Image 1 (cartoon, one colour):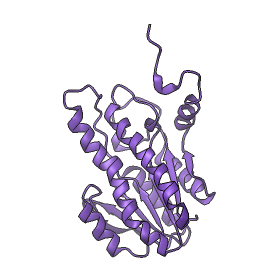
Image 2 (image 1 turned 90 degrees about the horizontal axis):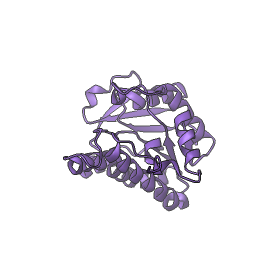
Image 3 (image 1 turned 90 degrees about the vertical axis):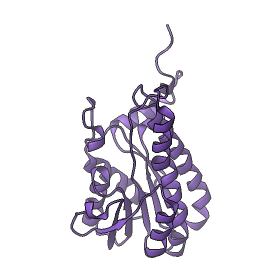
Length: 235
């Protein structure tokens, strides 16, 4: 699936990776780019059509799917991170918030737009996941849980939508230099580089893309005798 001449819908397109994906889609020759956000006024990139969307609200998702009948590529990028360990006092509340946005949201959007993609020849769904889909850190317990669920949903969509010729691409990466990771001391990829890797994988017909070195290292660690997700051995 090539971005050139496609009609792209990007959720969370007002900043971070979503903004980089929008810029790259325009540069690659997309015929139309819809930028979705809860507040469409926050989508200000020239060439992007702002649309209102709350990915946690089924009525909002359904309304947008009715309005945008020309979409051929859906990018589920909207996400939140509360920085909560699973044992935190309010971890259940934090997990519910992250799960609704990071897992249920992409499922709602994908289901709503699947008939549109089928009508338009199959198209593609890109789900922005994370290397934290596979590992959990002390400050990412609930976020990792929500992203692990999103990974499983992505794999389910891939199998179930194959018959209608919809490419489902799962994109994994480590920390990126965005507002979400402000204050975190770690190696961070540039959103522009991650966007480039995602679109290259889409064009190559891939099902999964490891968009930076962190994702590649974590993915390799899954095959270790003691999987990286198990953490350090008890002493």
